Amino acid sequence: MTTETFTGVEAPRSQRAPRRGTNWEKWGWIYMRGSGVLLLVLVFGHLFTNLIAHQGGVRAIDFAFVAGKWASPFWQVWDTLMLWLAVIHGSNGMRTIVNDYVGNEKLRRVMVIALLVSSVVLIVLGTLVVTTFNPCPAGANPSQVASFCPTH
Image (cartoon, rainbow, N blue to C red; front, side, top):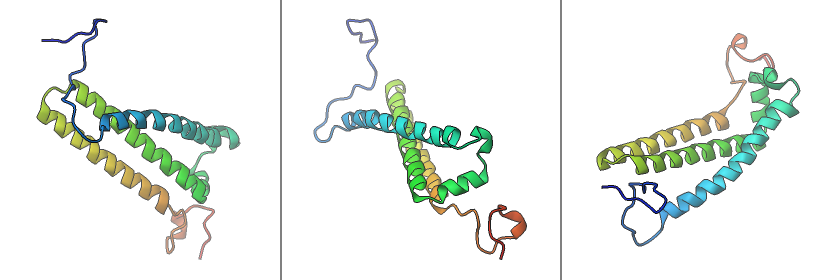
């Protein structure tokens, strides 16, 4: 039993009865458009800064470059925002695909929960990396830290 529109395209299977309250699908749709535009700005700004404005292109990107960049709170916020938006944007897109193409309700629920858990783990770990990054940890062996770190 398939439902077809006048164009001959099969309707998605995730048509559920409308509920009262907040329309989360609408807000998800709006989020995807807004985050997509903001991600374009963030990603192209990231690429411009790393590859064009910084002399040497991709060959010049090394540990010292990242350490210098993340020493600035501006770049920490920029990269963290880019991480959060990209993970949530991608997860929401995958959730939409799962809702449209997974017919088994239990499997769909497991896959959506797996998406949620993996997204939270990626956001937490990525945010920790950006915000706690220290290229010169106190008490480290001088032979194992970057050459620009002061030796004590």
